Image 1 (tube, rainbow, N blue to C red):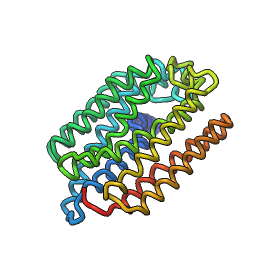
Image 2: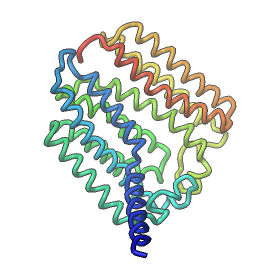
Image 3: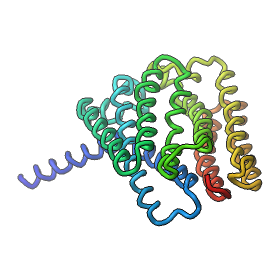
Image 4: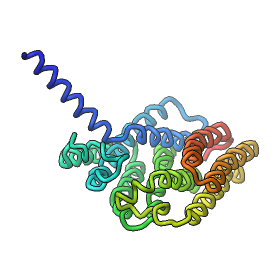
Length: 303
């Protein structure tokens, strides 16, 4: 009997641990870390030594804590509405696996620890940039989601901070070139999220989120939004080649890649089917690591 109770207790403990991990959204946190590392590399001088690796590890550790804390805080704030939507009703808080108080304590602990870690082991500028991203995400983007579709621009600002975090850590300062990976990530998020919001527009409507695909009759505004920001994405992605930070070959490859992404956007706008929307989401997921890989390979000058 005691063995059975012990097994049940162990199983319950593992389920709670799994719920806390889910609260941190590890897949999103991993994407944040990859893009943070990209910004770090782009900001480094070519002669960076072994010490830069240790600094990168500290940067990623602190950023992981803050990103996970932000993800958890977002779920705490949206828990009453997550229960209304099919795709979010099984999250840790609405499903009852964790209480809001437990989740809040967990989220605040991660966030504060991450900020302190970056402040002490990286530099104050990096901590400030990461902390600003968290505050914009939690205090502006999350509340605005229930008020206006324009929240996506605020969310894209917060979501574009990771390469700037990496840049601040790698260079110890910020230059205008840090705006390039920031701009790529900013403009990438807008078409990416537009097709996701279209796919789940009924869910968002039930949750009370007035996102553009929810309020847009006929999808005309959503289409213009998606295509216009994809065009801006292509333009911004080419800037490194025109300022001597990368070569002409990079620019050509970036344009080809951007046009391929634009093709899937046009295809979705014309067909307006779930399959074309999913294909556009997949194309966006493929585009992002490829454009950043091209930036890394095409780097020809220190920042």
